[in-house]
Image 1 (cartoon, rainbow, N blue to C red):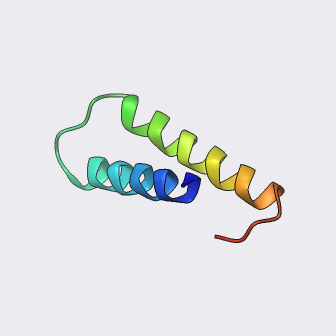
Image 2 (cartoon, rainbow, N blue to C red):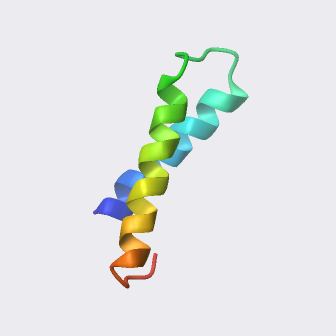
Image 3 (tube, rainbow, N blue to C red):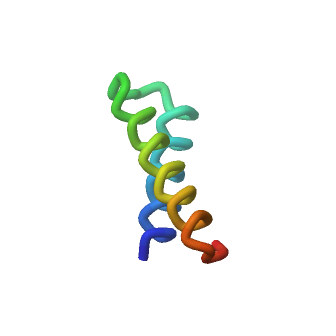
Amino acid sequence: MLETIAFILIILWVLGLVSSYTIGGFIHILLVIAIVVILIRVIQGRRL
Protein backbone atom coordinates (compact mmCIF):
# COMPACT_ATOMS: atom_id res chain seq x y z
CA MET A 1 0.00 0.00 0.00
CA LEU A 2 2.82 2.41 0.81
CA GLU A 3 4.46 1.87 -2.55
CA THR A 4 1.16 2.67 -4.27
CA ILE A 5 0.90 5.95 -2.37
CA ALA A 6 4.51 6.77 -3.23
CA PHE A 7 3.90 5.99 -6.90
CA ILE A 8 0.83 8.26 -6.99
CA LEU A 9 2.75 11.07 -5.28
CA ILE A 10 5.62 10.78 -7.76
CA ILE A 11 3.17 10.91 -10.69
CA LEU A 12 1.52 14.02 -9.24
CA TRP A 13 4.93 15.63 -8.80
CA VAL A 14 5.95 14.89 -12.41
CA LEU A 15 2.64 16.26 -13.67
CA GLY A 16 3.28 19.41 -11.66
CA LEU A 17 6.69 19.80 -13.27
CA VAL A 18 5.52 19.38 -16.85
CA SER A 19 2.41 21.54 -16.52
CA SER A 20 2.50 25.31 -16.37
CA TYR A 21 0.25 25.24 -13.30
CA THR A 22 1.98 24.63 -9.98
CA ILE A 23 0.84 25.07 -6.42
CA GLY A 24 4.13 26.44 -5.14
CA GLY A 25 6.00 24.19 -2.75
CA PHE A 26 3.14 21.68 -2.46
CA ILE A 27 4.38 19.64 -5.42
CA HIS A 28 7.86 19.40 -3.91
CA ILE A 29 6.42 18.37 -0.55
CA LEU A 30 4.69 15.50 -2.37
CA LEU A 31 8.04 14.44 -3.82
CA VAL A 32 9.71 14.48 -0.40
CA ILE A 33 6.89 12.39 1.09
CA ALA A 34 7.17 9.86 -1.75
CA ILE A 35 10.94 9.55 -1.31
CA VAL A 36 10.55 9.08 2.45
CA VAL A 37 7.97 6.33 1.91
CA ILE A 38 10.26 4.53 -0.55
CA LEU A 39 13.21 4.80 1.83
CA ILE A 40 11.13 3.37 4.68
CA ARG A 41 10.21 0.40 2.48
CA VAL A 42 13.86 -0.22 1.53
CA ILE A 43 15.02 0.08 5.14
CA GLN A 44 12.38 -2.42 6.21
CA GLY A 45 13.92 -4.85 3.73
CA ARG A 46 11.05 -5.02 1.27
CA ARG A 47 11.69 -4.54 -2.41
CA LEU A 48 9.53 -2.27 -4.55
